[in-house]
Length: 365
Image (cartoon, rainbow, N blue to C red):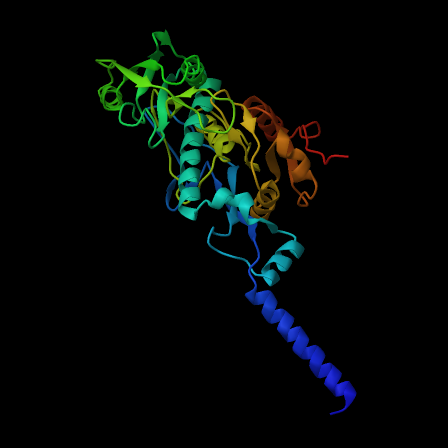
């Protein structure tokens, strides 16, 4: 066989071998790509995303789209070819697998965590919107979770309302930890609670809870590797009672990043006129009960998904602005927001056509 032919054959076989290896060899990476966007003012799967009963609502126009990111599943292992393609693709992002699924977290665990965050974001969105409208919302501190095998297991339950700790009234979730950690490990803590079942019954019957209970829990020592402190094995959260019904109907979505857009959608439906003036506005951002907007992941993917659907403006958490502005899709204006008040102010300018002075995102440097 001529030397040139042999060399070409060897090179071809080498290339084939490399391609086969690239397809067969798994690499520890995962991929993010633009996901669906949904208009919080519109319908999804044949029913309104926001359903409000017991309060007058008003017609809306335009778009207030929440945005999402698609991610590869926890048990999927990319091969080298897919990773290289993802690195080169403009609209995708390849990240270490542990970034999305830390500490070996399974897809089921990640899905459950995302579902809990999504549920909490809906509650905070409702509170933030109603606070802006001066509509009172009743709030109280609850047992959010109980750690399995902890001193509190079997004595306190998720949903119990915490009225006081050692006779001191609690107003915020942080009050509970502060009062518990005043103890030394091994000491007793007395919780005054409304049991979860009684609280649910009282809400359904629109009455005050009929009874409270005192529950004593012996503290244990923390094992988080930090400073030793007393713990009982619960996390405290906040629950609310709303003066009318607000339901958010959106399946197959998780995480807290739609909070801002849900809050704006609720506000729009409860007020005359249109927040957007008929314009196409998308956005992202967590929101807390006070209306503070927090950063999210995958903002670059979300801006691409929003622009592909026709968005003109994108409400961007201030802490995500620099990343989003590095590669802004053509025709999309990134508007920086820190609070729901910022977002409402920006929307006022947008519907008035006064967009020159909007607080726009800029890349660092």
